[in-house]
Image (cartoon, rainbow, N blue to C red; front, side):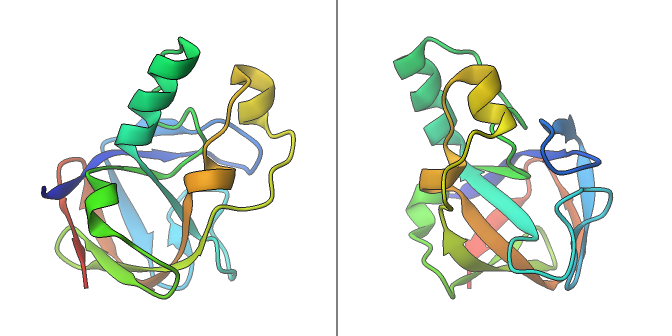
Length: 144
């Protein structure tokens, strides 16, 4: 299966649900331009498998979509990439991310308070930006 960007979402500040956008500029050493999670740390961009959202919607009778789990990038087919911490993958023509961690400590986030369920603490890929570039919905995602 080929992995592709299903959706891109950002928010101005941390602790907010994200809104979907059509394209984004990934900035080396920072994250996504205009996103509150950007900065000099190891969780600059958060990725989530679109299939996990579909499964969660079915299991919990929800209708969650892009940005609702506070992820930046939903990837359709991400599970086929079999990514682990330290792995790098390319989004579109030039942007390269490196997986810094999978999951994070769970806390009563805006997602949990709003929807009663969260995926990032268990399945989220937290990444740092190695190479920047512009990404768009439908762009290929390739493990390097």
